Length: 160
Ligand code: SME
Image: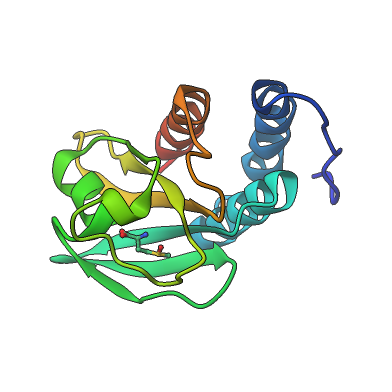
């Protein structure tokens, strides 16, 4: 396993193109779920400088905070609540250009302005976790992020 990621400059797409294979090789040799989720967060946080990157794990009827990088965050989110709970309920990615315009957005930090949440689905198409990325910039996420992060989450989910 490489202990350091090679930094990639360029467009967001070029950065994903360079980063995703590195994340795959980082994770491939390790079976522990928490270790892998933690390294995925660190890699995305480090490469893009996002404000907050983390996973929430489905535990019974709630999402519970998992590995993350960034400031402390709320620990439990109910199904259908906020962006994360809505992504879980809909089993679909949500790109939110302005969190203030998202009804019920859970503001863990007032610095967060836009976000993307991508669900992780198991073999039975049930959501078992969500990846939440927050930015201090308005409108920081696009289809490029959605497609790249869905590819990453789907690839990762198939291993568990
Ligand atoms: N943004 C989330 C809450 C979690 S924090 O931002 C880390 C939401 O509304 O679902």
